[in-house]
Length: 313
Image (cartoon, rainbow, N blue to C red):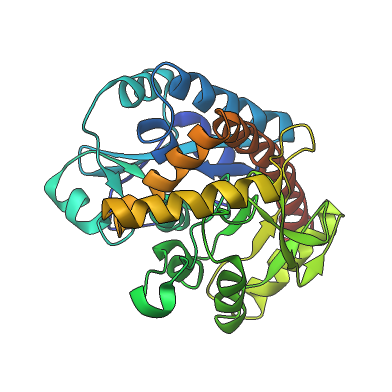
């Protein structure tokens, strides 16, 4: 697939541009995990490991960021080092994208803004550790991640380990069903919960064949659907955190967050850090492992999709 024409400046790295021109598989990656995830230099090291995992899966990685008023598709080693080591680079979701681009600023892309950028760049696959979703208590707070909204708008398949355990995963799945976003699990019967193998919610579909998954994605878009297909893969058994242990830690963290008056955009980061402390750092290690394993799966599925597209074109 050739890069899409766009009035918004989209700058492909040479490797990504050549891969798209030649019909080779490419996987988009977010840069928020570099700037707002781990501390330096672990964040830079993990970003390189994630890109290596995409290559192991058979595709070209395209880590996305915003810089100089353009969407940069495919970060160089120097770019990763700069974003990993500098302070104050903002997290940019899809609602913030036009503001940062018009102002010529820099920014790290989230899942939602990466989906916008990937579609503009002509990349049909994106990999991430986990999605945002419907927050616990959303019946009164209306706190629903923009990731879910963007899934209904961007024609990019998402490979992930489900959604974060700190969310209301039953409501998240209900939302995806209501919005007609296909959810397909591979390697598991259940919808995974980020670093936990199961959310306790059965996945609507399980498909373990890469080529069949590629045909499903192609068929979804051929039928005229404008949005994403979500393909989940669970963490490896050796990386997974016990669901019951994680739930206990989350319950305690939610109670503490209420006492501390933490809500809104700051809640996710607060909860993730609190749960990590409660598990002795094991959730952070699991997070890194899941970033890598989903990237490899994303590489495999992007390769299968490229084979399918090239075979029928």
